[in-house]
Length: 225
Image (cartoon, rainbow, N blue to C red; front, side, top):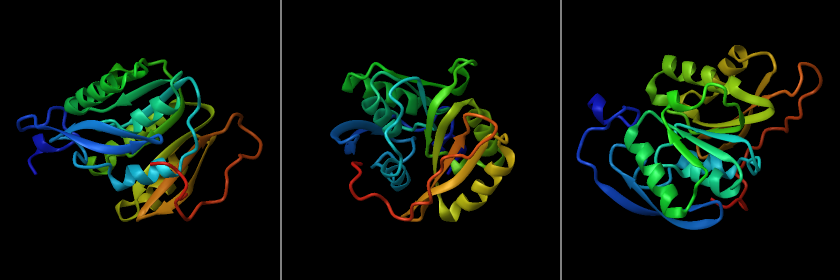
């Protein structure tokens, strides 16, 4: 695929062709707009579905980050579940950001900021980060992105990442534990449908025992998608 068509390009090539899809997010049936030139425009992708099935309710306030937002399923879920929080939907793809803004407006959500990475205030810290990161962007760029954003978690907060097992989830988990600051702990929180959900927790202090659960091997069947 030529570079301009990549979903992680700044400006996708091709004529803008919007479509409407039905998706269930935060316990609600929604009609949302997607388009060509963004990630998974036909449906809610499996990885994001697995992530949303295996995360706890987001914090009720503060700054919440959807890193690599695409057309917005994670950001919209965060905004619906935490209406008092500020949700930062971050992507380099301008078409994706336009779709997030359009979907937020259609749903009457005023707590989503869909912006490029450089437009997030430099002093912003996050009470949670949820991400289906763009693995195919390349290892070096992926690593740089994660090392930029994950240390901006508030102490005592979590990042939740979903990564396909055959695209290096286990090696990424080991790398994160080795490269993040010492106050971080990384573990596999869930495995389902060929994906791992990784939990990156920033300890509230530099000493003491971290409150991480044992890994979960099956998706919770009672979680709304």
